[in-house]
Length: 165
Ligand SMILES: [Fe+2]
Image 1 (cartoon, rainbow, N blue to C red):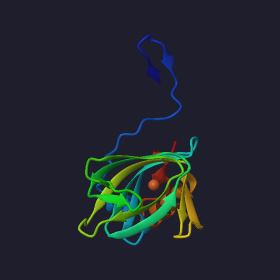
Image 2 (cartoon, rainbow, N blue to C red):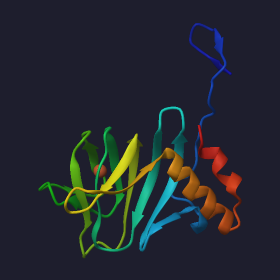
Image 3 (cartoon, protein in one colour):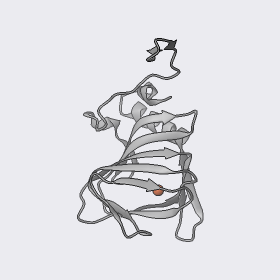
Image 4 (cartoon, rainbow, N blue to C red):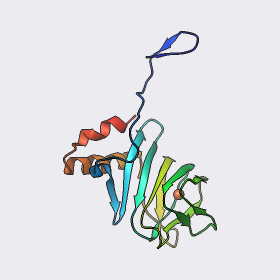
């Protein structure tokens, strides 16, 4: 229930979330690839959107991809860049990725760990060097990955429910 400034009340369709973004329990990080994890924060099944932290503890090329919708990022730790651009996203940087752009995420060798918050709508479409599709992710594939991981580490598949809207 929410009361606005005029005193009228509304039933909200979704509950708020307030959690430490970087979890104390290492099991909350979901393995994505060798040296790569994500931490779900909000999985929006109505808008096909998800917010998560990406944590990388290896250097080099992570992925070449495009997304048909915008992506917003905020770098919490470390640095990374796209091969296609001459800027570097540093700790504290905000990044806007326009729809339709193909880019290749690289973490430099001198960066032992990067953590970035991403707000992604729609999908991530992974591509090889010839722009052929090699896979995709959306909020539903993320939910599946999380549930499988949380089940396997003993948190339980329903641990994820608190992050789903
Ligand atoms: Fe991207």
